[in-house]
Amino acid sequence: MKPFLPIFFLLFVTSFVNAQNQNSKSNKADAAWLSNAQAAILKNEYFFKSMTSSFGCANRKQKVIYNINSNGYSVTPLNNKPDDGLNKSWQASFQLLDINKGTAGLKPATKPLYTTYEGSLIQSHPFFYIQYTNDEDGLRQNFIIAKKPEGSKNLVVRMQIENKDLHLELVNDNILKFKNDSGRTIIQYDGLKVWDANDKPLKAFMKLSEKKYS
Image (cartoon, rainbow, N blue to C red):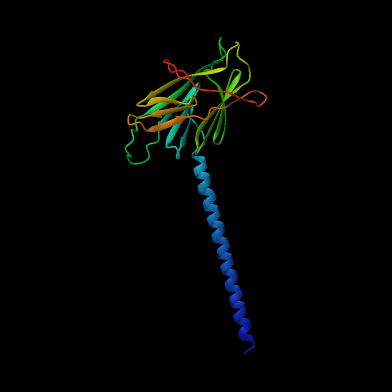
């Protein structure tokens, strides 16, 4: 009987180790699946959702909600946390007036066509497109101009800015800050970059006027 004891013991250990490996693999697979599921849910939060006459998306990292309409977008706070001392009643909007070179410009369509894919939205207007992307860094707005506007002056993207309970400050001609009464920056509009049709970077800057155009 003695020769059988080691064999039985080895088989038992081997079976036990195999069970541990299987459980370990199963646990790792479950953990990986849960992690992927959570990542997918978090990623889904940044997707654009179709609404009655617009598109909306939330941004947990930036703590805001974006609402995309036919000629621009608005930003409001995401009030999902206890009061942190910030004014939660603020809001801001950026409405495109036209894209011009000194004369009659390209105007946004009343009912543009939309194409969405996850955290990206493309808005098609006559002779130009606006692409929106939403991720943890915030909302990015890209203008793709398919037809050169008439005129000989520099290309201008003219927008009207409206806000509530915020004050505008333009820094270095390329960073537009929206501050509350205590001077704290609540939102920021920056990252202005321009390329021509040959992917050559062009000089660009922002400008504020009394009519709130930029």
